[in-house]
Amino acid sequence: MNICSYICLNFFNMMEMEKETDVLERSKIDRSQFEEAAYILKALANETRLCVIMQLTRDGEKSVTGLMEQMDCEQSLLSHHLTDMRAKGILRCRKSGKNSFYSLSDKRFSNVLKCILDCGN
Image (tube, rainbow, N blue to C red; front, side, top):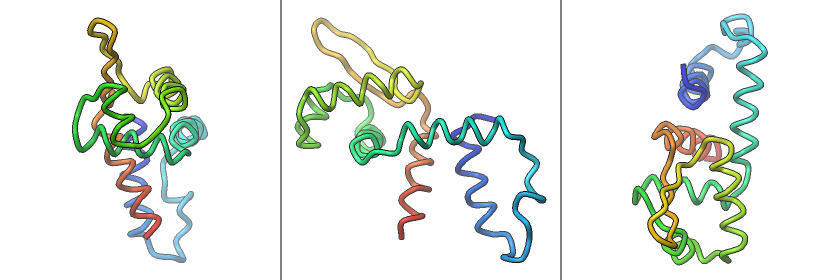
């Protein structure tokens, strides 16, 4: 199972469990799955990165310029985040001439964003 769907599915499963039930007893997961989940969550733990995921979820592939305009973000800061998110497997990059176009590497990152936003409400 992909780590994105794992995080999202287990979040909803945990919310449905009775409070007195030991979540760790009922979950059939090993430490490596927690490590993978933590790796992804750390990579997303920034409002600029969450905003990038939101923009790409709404609009699909976007250029760096398009993201900058919608997010009101400086090019150097945005490029730093995009490069790191790409290196961690969250984003895909397509070059066309001098322009770079970014998209989500897996649509399930949109589900992870939804889970994170739902937790805040």
